[in-house]
Image 1 (cartoon, rainbow, N blue to C red):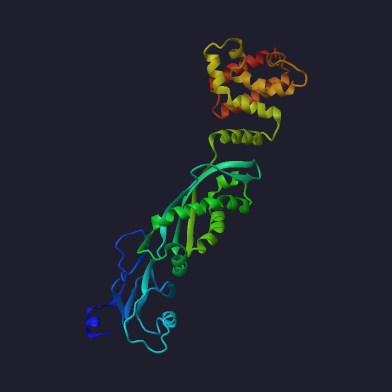
Image 2: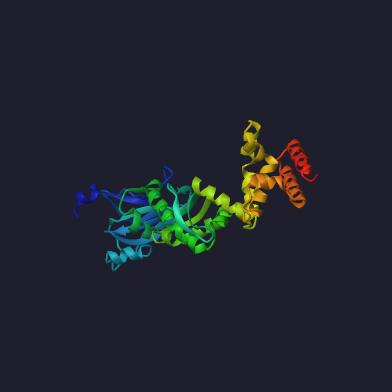
Length: 338
């Protein structure tokens, strides 16, 4: 090297990264027209790692600390450059800094309902959303698989890829957990743990560590929610058809009461508050006999009247019937015992 060439070259004595903004995962030290001095100092701060790359080949990785660069501190780079003794001349190498602190509150969600197999319902289409956090754990792997030789790489740029990983693994996570949808909805922590177990290997493959994941909501499309509500209603009455019809009638009481209050005629009178419950009970009892619901009400047995009164009392206790409505239907039913 001539004297003028030596004087015009610029040499690096200290290599460091002072992060100027949040959201940067990778930053390449600007080495254009620069060479690294033998004995230069590398400063790696807490929540950082540094990676040396020589002619496209990954070499040495440094964690937090201060290092004087030599063949002892750069063994892999020394091997790549075939230094068989202590090097004294300046050298060129690409140096990448990685931010290793947790990237928290990253959002995930299902833009459209996804279909999963379920032990109770056979198959359901669900929506879910939540958040997760991760960090760069293996810089060399993240460099070769994701960030490459770019000057910088941000959280926003990898966000779409990570959301895709979550969506790809939701169905497998639920199936692997063996937990039914109703239990997942009731215990979202179980769902989150199943997702972490399923997703962690996918994050590991690109040099990231999945630190935490939360599920903030699990829901069904509206039309399936109605079907599930009916199934829950059947479960509440033990699958008994007569009781289920009572349940359905009780669900419709506000509509019946509105029709009766507006002078709905014979149908409105017959489908009034208490009579509606009685109809639901007696319809199941008389299906085989082919009795008309209204006729069944007219021919009630004493035990039927007492059973209906008990049901009305339950509805009153739950606040579905007012005291005045209960008293009116009670008087009407007791007349049938005379």
